[in-house]
Length: 253
Image (cartoon, rainbow, N blue to C red; front, side, top):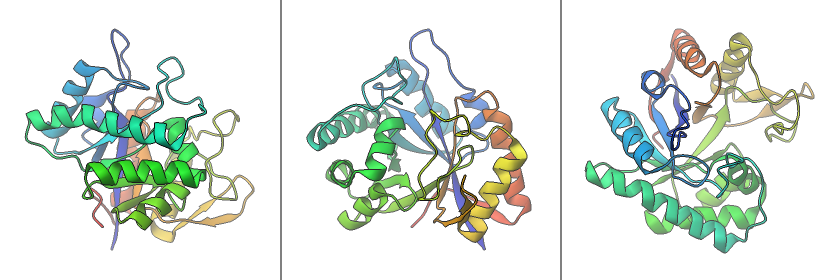
């Protein structure tokens, strides 16, 4: 029996800027990564997103990013491991406050954007982020790019670690995601996307841009909530996975 978690980045509106269709997407995912105010989100949006996720019985995680609202946290910054540690602790704490209001617990932490990609390849940064999560609570699950330095750091420190794959991103032969600066970084065709997801979940492989088979582990699949087709992607991917006898449920080690 195959089983996988579907996660989505949510709560990324702030102020008068509205992004995504949270209420609808939450019907199809099993884990929500909620922005914590650095790359996106604000206190009111965090409160609303937590409530919506709880109403839909979706597991909740913190989605800490770099302090870069203008760049949506997708521009790399030269930060030290100590700075990364502090940023992650701070943002986990912000979300934890809203969870405490509802006597709810945090399931996971998944870094966002550039911070995620930097930690995927930098062992020192990965270790600092994993340590931050562990120091807040060893029971929190760390989400990271499958087979990356971040998942290695999480496993080494003793965290439950979920290896993440992407439905709408292309891969390189080394297992990394294709940079968003390249035209072929995103998959916009639903059929192509779902074929990639099914292969990753059932075979543990993905076809890279170099047309090689790359082995990976697929514990959780990311569905981005900010794309134009985010809702239809979520509907189609969940439906197709279930037709292929893949159980969609929140991650359990």
